[in-house]
Length: 101
Length: 174
Length: 88
Image (cartoon, rainbow over all chains, first blue to last red; front, side, top):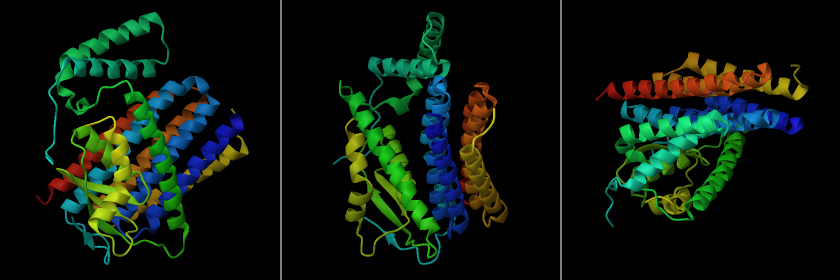
């Protein structure tokens, strides 16, 4: 049980580190946003799950935090992306191809 | 098809839903079902529902049927699988020395009409493989795609990005 | 409580994540880039607070994590709105 929790903690940490690596490596704001948001969200969920294995009696509050992170994180990143687009930050060169309906 | 945003009228059922959501959140935060805690939660939830129930417009648009909880669980399951796949996909792209990305902005049409439905769809798109919703204008979502295959048109993009989530969300929201 | 090897490894990975995000926060180059880095950092901090609750064996840190998450979200949205309103 504790070993399973530790493994989830490790997986969460690994996703966070990879996401931050993406934050450094990606060429423009929108790609960085993708890397940062996705990795941080899944990393946090994995850490919460790991802690849940260590302390099963905390599950209700951990569930609330997980639901909250899952719901607000994408909203926040969409808001940043929209703000950046409206304030005139162009996607990296060669990526301004646009598919319109 | 009529594409304007629909906010259904606020009914008694809506107040019952707001009360239920408040009480559920209270019980989860307290973490037990002891009599006094539950009573206090009911009083607070009723108060919140009476004072602010008419402003929870975001909670309108839910379909009412006995199968709704099942559909919500099905959506959550599908969503979690997509989230894990998205992260593995992203991890491979980040680790690869050549950084294989081909970004594009894509416009995607949605048939969902309720505000909560569109919010959930935008959230789902943000957390699934390679896509990030940037803006929602009426029934059109502007989506940033990390790897847009060459020669994709708008219809194919809609099918690939939004269709499956739309099907899941459309089962329990307008 | 004493930490296992796996837990130390997890802490090390989170430290790497914080380091890289902070680097992006310092490098910029534009304001939204810094906001993205700050947003990522705040989510990592939320997870860190939950981990602290486990290390200190004290559930009060869970409430702190919840409130911190709420405030960080409101802050991110507020800054994004401010950037957006700049050029209107």
